[in-house]
Length: 176
Image: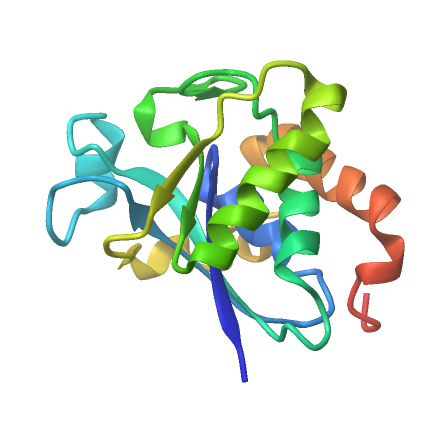
């Protein structure tokens, strides 16, 4: 039986590419959460006026990888100290956030922030209840797999994948 984690750490293409490599992750889906516009589009979210942020929905097997380990990956591969920004991606749609579905996920998120505060200093990651996850358009799925040599992928995604592979080698899918 799978569970889900909804995470926002800048561009969803980056998080999707990383979480796809982890053992126990069944599916990673790009989408939007945290806003007030129903059925948002990428174009709308990019304006920064919908309240939504780019997120990934990580469906995982908790018998293989824990929610806590997913959060450790999260706090390792993105910068949780920059408000509404990841690198050159600027705006509320790129904020760092954890959207929880249960009290246990909320508690785990709070514990992860406490664990990583000595590493990062002041963490600005938002912890909020998930109201609705809106799937992104199909062209955003598997973006890195389909565009590995694009400038954005090489400059932004590849370093995150390298950090994941270095720090979580024991958690990678055996096919990698």
